[in-house]
Length: 231
Length: 388
Image 1 (cartoon, chains in turn brown, orange):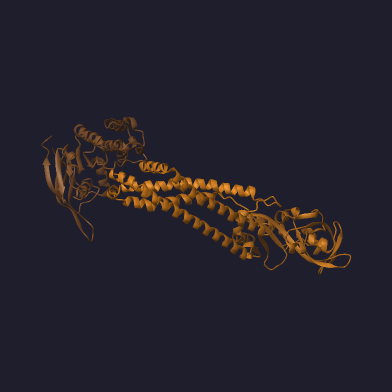
Image 2 (cartoon, rainbow over the protein chains, first blue to last red):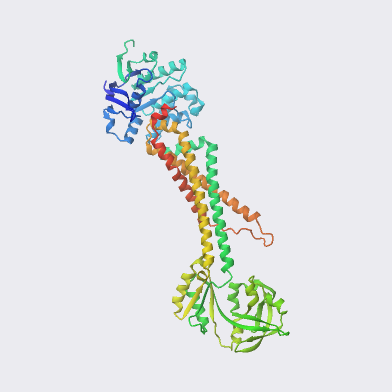
């Protein structure tokens, strides 16, 4: 399978006077349709890596290729567009827009792309909400939903633009164990159904073990990179 | 654009009470503008009207102080030379001394007018407190002062001594009160024919008095010059603007102080909106972060806040106009002078000014949103996510 995302020699240094280096020349590549977990203790640099992967942050040095496009060559607006079209985010704290309903939240990335709202896209949003088991509450405001429901809306939202990559930062970190199981099952199903590449950041080894590939980050370097044989 | 607008509307709707308070805040500012504007222009108009409304605004006479013989033609020339000239009336004044039976005498200025047109300037008819207007030759009306001072009565005939031309008799047919003491104490008003006869009978006038349209009061100098170029170099003119420098500087002072009040009201509205929107940006930073993570462009994120400013401005201006009208109407209705039945405070409602106030409020609200809009475009997604 071709690579959908590739990092070459990524370093990240924070601070101007007191410099703290968080990432030291990270090289990584993710295959299309793969299900990856990045683990590491807090402070290991995994969140920084995730932000750089998601083009939310810039590396101090090194190149990121998304769909074989070097993001260094892109302007701010082009990066926003690239993010909108290619990357779906799932965050630990759900991050829905509380002023909008579940359905409107799911449609938001499409609206941001400024494409017209067609019947097809609304059908797709409904289908996705159905997929995550929320068709009954699709017209509820985000604030009137439980944590697990909100996270499932966030998952549906991350899929609306058919992104190649989904970045999930501790997607179950804020959920109880039942919801955690449900959400992981869901991510797996999506991975199978839509061939979407998943990169999941977690500090929970048990969760990571369910992925095809586990990458461990330690002190800003890749400590371990192995394919999960148990699956 | 549409997306930013929809998000702005949703943000405003989600904090209804806050939105309502901001709109009310802008509204109060605009209503003060509307009210102060109407008050100041009302006061100015009232002041100008009481000062010059019942007098000649431009007076034309010969440069060599001689009599005008062809004044009927001149009247037409003046009226035709500028459409802003509303009334023109010939005038011949004759100073004299009025005697009564007991030989007490008082100086008097007999002012001869074409009474019909002069009445439109001085409103003699409305000022008559006893008797009637003169309608025959040798009839005069006098200021009410003469009634008490000389013990004159209606329809009495009195002697007037005019220098050079000697004594003549006049009949008093009425008394007027023009609300100006010096006029009540010195004027006798008659037809121009009467004063012509007092001076020996030649058909002449000394000056032409004119009034201009109210909207052109302040163009008096320009109108005067225009008329003078039409009627020839042998005439000169005297206008109210040049003769009332202190009144004008007073009016100017009033305008400037009203402008100051309005500017400060505007500044407080701007500061209010800018600070509130800055707080909204903080409140909504999580949402802006999410939208940015989903790929919204910085320009669209900024637009959300510009639209919020615009929407708040439009609703605020509308509320302000309603509040302002409410204030104006209640002042016109309830603050009434018991004696005259007129409103205590003269107000002048200028729709153009109200429109401009509203437009300024909207523009200013949108501008005030620029700072928070800039702030939102600089918001970093990572910081928002970290600080959740």
